[in-house]
Amino acid sequence: MSLFVSRFRCLAAFCTVALVAAGCGLSTPDKAAAPVFDVPGGTYNDDVAVTITCATSGATIYYTTDGADPTDQSTEYVAPVPVSGDGTSFTLKAIAVKPDWNDSSITQASYAIDYSIAVAVLAGAPPAYTDSQQVNITVGGENILSYQYRLDGGSWSAETSVAVLISLSGLAKTAHVIEVIGKNVHGVWQDTASATSCSWTIVDATWLGAPDTGRPCWEERMVLVFTNMVRMAPIEYRDSRYYFKNPGWNQDVLETHPVVPPLYHHLDLNDAARYHAEDMRDQDYFAHDSIDGTLWSDRIMSFFSDDAYIGENIAAGYTLPWLVVSGWICDGEADDGTPQAGHRTNIMRSGFKVMGAGYAFGGSYMHYWVQDFGGHPSPPNYPVVAAGHDYVQSGNVTFLLNYYDPSGAPQSVKLTLDGVEYDLTLDIGAAHAGTYTIDLPRDDPSNGRPYYFSAVDSGGGVWRYPGPGVFMTYGEGSCLTDYVP
Image 1 (cartoon, rainbow, N blue to C red):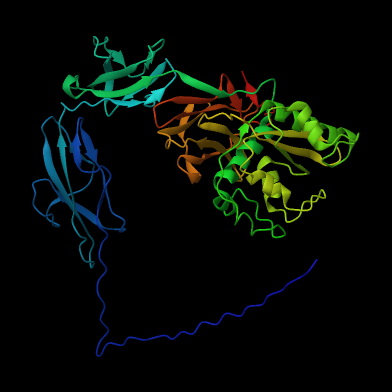
Image 2 (image 1 turned 60 degrees about the horizontal axis):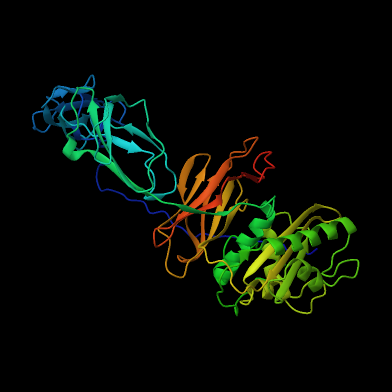
């Protein structure tokens, strides 16, 4: 261990300038603070009352409603100023006055009351494209008590309280539009010609990413997500929060590696990798070749016969997927005896098309990790490649989705977490080939929170991940469930 002590002395040069007035001392009186109205100016569909305050203690407020500038001879403010009655309109002006102080500047705002204003506001409208045949829309709006709606130009519904949702199910897989008119507290209905509306299209979604009897597990899936983040934007990844900045690690990496397409999950490689992770844990060793003498390549080929072009990375001790991928990326020379920076080279090798990760918990190192790579004559070409969550930022859960579509950027990428929809934004890479993310506060529920991703590609195709079922926020609170069918 080395100890480095730095001592700094900071000196600031300064001088004091005294201003002296000839003759007797003179000073400028203070000025009262301008009055503040608690209701902004505007047109309202119900009566309002404006409270006026002043930050200057001891000041008296005077106001006018006839357009004249107020003085200390105007009406003194003692109670909220009412703006009431249909058709009422005026400009409210106010000043603050305090003895031996300068009067404040004038504050003014114009108000109007129009009972005929009725505008419904919708919440929970579906996205432009969805595979859900059900909608639940909340109707509200300023002073709106009830509403009517119609679907796809049909008949208007009966009057319904805003406490009741518009809930529809079994909708046809086509374009839809809902129009809504609201009725305000004065019994005035919104004009049908200016009805509030929302439109969307229900399409068949392609379901992806549902684990097959627990393969991949959460750790294995997230190794794939972070690996693809590196492949699609190597330099951005290295300079991002996802690359662990350990002072002892190699920071000058990935300079010569070009961007390459992402890897897709392959179940056989997943099986090969998990088998080796569990074997290293159970037999207490750390090496590519199995302890029984089986060569690493023979082991992988016994599971994966699609292509003879294969590779492997192993690691142990890292607690989270994003940390182990950082470790593989940073190495100068692999600790397992590989005479080159083989980990980084394997991750960035353009000839690899598919991957399976393996994870095992327990044993001497507690965490064992394996990546098995393979070529593939016809890898999948769906745009949602892999997705999930990890704990990259203290206090938050980070949700990530790898997107790859040479034909163009997605129209939308969304997360539905515990029934609430969020938009993901591009974090690293290009819009058509990058990773979309969102950070949300940890909730730490005892059973975790269900979630899934959806994306609309450039052609309007809808993709859901996973499908069927939902992922769970594994690792949040005491949740140890990764997926629920």
